[in-house]
Every structure is written in structure tokens, then in C-alpha cells.
Image (tube, rainbow, N blue to C red; front, side, top):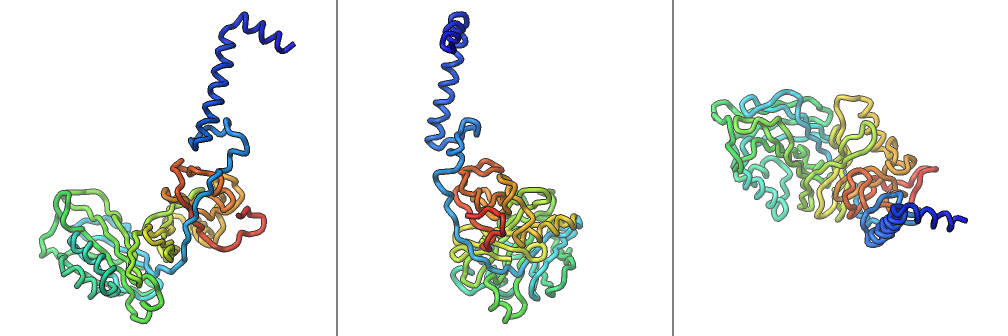
Length: 347
């Protein structure tokens, strides 16, 4: 009966035949593309195909403690008026502000840390820079001190502009080091180097952090990068080795993740919202964020290279592309090695 109906329909409607052939072609093309790893709409996949046949490689990370955190102040800043910095440290430390630091001098100093004496105090930094800066200002910071420090070049230097690109000097390089020699033995990270853009006549862009580096006792250097959290109130996060590592501060100092050959990764808070700060603390404790895929498990996986932290342990193996930005996932790492709580999916 059905066959007779289709034949009759075909005799009166050639477009029906063309439509059937087109549907068959689309389904076949989707199957072929899916077989070779191309992304196809979920509706064209079978339930067995939703789980990736190639598990995402896992990058091993080791947690360390980062005793330093440095944020830009809220006050307007410029080369002439100076800039406000807000350091927060787990131990008493020294904040050294190098105005007009030479670009090549800083690169040479960072290389010297890897191949020579560890840059663990201001004097060693000055020597490694070969004193190629306009002005150096230092502040002593206590462990419970969260006040802003205002740093400024002396007016008598007459420096109001650092010229057009490519520049030979950074406007400001802020270096945090531990003040107590005994404390330097207790931490794997011995210093933090932050390169700051400060507005001048040539470039009026607002103050911002250009680069942040963490220097370790082993002579390694890691560039601090953000992890991007998903969900309400989520903010970026930063961290990096054993040859794969994890370190801590940022807003009060926070966790950071280190890995040889990779940027360091750690969390960033929204300073204007106390509720978001509480949510951030919950996330650091391994709770308070739900997986964007299953909406059940706690977020415990960061995807590389896009650095989106958005899925749980159970869902990370189901995707070859990031659920947030659709970038191809090369690797992932666990934010916490603690066992999942009861009722939470786990590998």
C-alpha cells in the first residue's frame, strides 16, 4: 500500500523524487564527514557517535604555591602622574618598580635567571638589567598589607613619552621578591615580573598588564595566562610544572598551574562583587560551578589551547571541540586531583 502511494506520488510530483535523493545525499555526506573527524550537526549523529573515539590527552600538572599577586589600582594613571599598584603576598616581600626598563635588558635578565644566579632579590635584578632603566622605586610589603602603592618617575627626569612602536623601553616593570631569605627556601616561585603599559602622549590606551612571568628556584620561567571560567559570575583564572605544575595568589593570592614549556595558569576575581568573590572561593574548593554539558558534575577540567575551564571529568572525553568556543582540543588537565563527591560523574 505504501509503495503504491509513493509511486503514485512520484508520477504526479517529480520534485518528491528529487527531494528523496537530496536527503539521501545529505545523510551520506554527514556520515562520511563524521567518519573522517569533521564536525557535523548533533541531529545527524547517532547516540554512539557523540562520545569521541579518541580520548583527549591529559597533561599532568603539579600544584605549587605562588606567594605573589599584583593588580593595577583603580586610579587614573599616566607616565607623568604615575600609577597605583596593589600587591598582595603570602609573605613579607619587596616591590621594585623599574620605570623605562629596556626591552632587551629585561629579556637578557630573564635569560640570565635561567642560566645564572636566580633573580630572588632586587639587587640581583638591578645587576641583571645592567641598570638599563630610568628610575627604580622600592616598597616593602607585609603579608597582611593590601594597600595600594603609588609609583611615579621623578619630574626632573623629564620623561613624558616612550616613543612610537617598536619601543626600546617598557614604561613600567614591577618585580615582586620575597624579603626574608628563609622564605625563599620555602617556595618554588622566587619572584614575579609584571610588565605594565602606562598611558603617555604616543599611546593613550588605559593602563594594563602586558605580560606576567613567574620565576622558579629551578631557573624556569613561566608566562602567567588566564583560565576562562564558565557560568554566572565566572571570571578568568591564571596558573603552570613538574614538568607540569600548579601555583597559588591573585586576588588574595590564588591557585596557579605550571607545566614545562607551557604558560602558567591562575583564577582572576571580580573585585566589585562580593558574591562573585564567594563563588570564586567555592570554585577553588572544588565546588560551586556546574559542567556546561551535563549540568551535574562540578567543573574540573581546563581545555588546551583555548584555556576554557567548563567541563567535568566525565564529559571531557566526549568532545574533540571546546563546547564554548569550538576550538579543537589538543589537551586537558584537572583543576583538582581530589576524588569526586558522591553523585558527581567521574572517570
